[in-house]
Image (cartoon, rainbow, N blue to C red; front, side, top):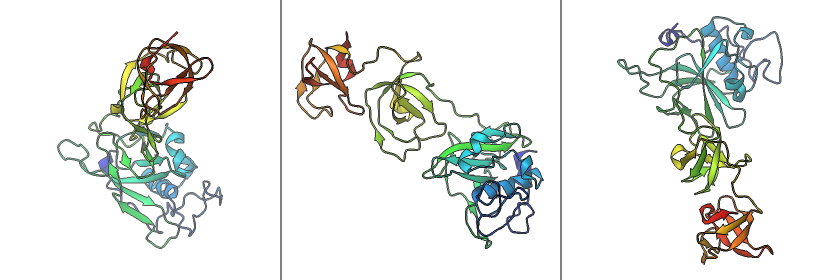
Length: 324
């Protein structure tokens, strides 16, 4: 079955469907607080909606055959049965789109993917069916394109959420025109320099992360995120999330063991500043041998340098210091 055949299925969205149990406040399901092993899915919430539509595509009313998690939406992409479902990063009709990053996450059913007739490339925002309401009055389905489609990554961008990917039944053959999954310039473990600001959250909804000029390491990659690279020090302490163009590669080696830390004895080889934010007077001390008293993460001049009595000489960047 190709995705074009899936799109021809007449999806039943009202209470005449045998794939739903339209109770008024969530219904009975193994993934709500009203547990009943003898019932299958429910209509009013997003997981129930996707369960029911997926069962219609599969042609079964037994949710146990679906391989979908009996869990909150935020866990679907991680816990789905991969012997029944493929995880892909580009939309296909019949897929379940998965989001995390907010509350219990969200899922939606991909009803239609607009494609160029000649090239097969996605040329618009996929149409998604969502069931998110709490009363069955014939209006609890939402259909449309309430997202921004990222044609580069294949993500459906939803404000406040992090897009995780699409779940596609293995019997829905993927067209050869389906683009490959995105590749990433940097790998976990790469040593990099921070060249531009990032964010405290991968989806960009947090506070600005600075660390300009810091030499750090890629700790994690969050696919399809606005700021996919989690960057931090060799001990795994995060500095922030950054876009690819905010980083430059230093090497692909394992984290160096010579990174400056509090207590290190150093020689001052370049000028610093009287304030860690760079708003003070120039600090000299060229050639002096001093100690790292404190490291101020996120500051322009993060290394507070002083003598053995902890009297501060000034604040310096990493390249202004030579470890002794």
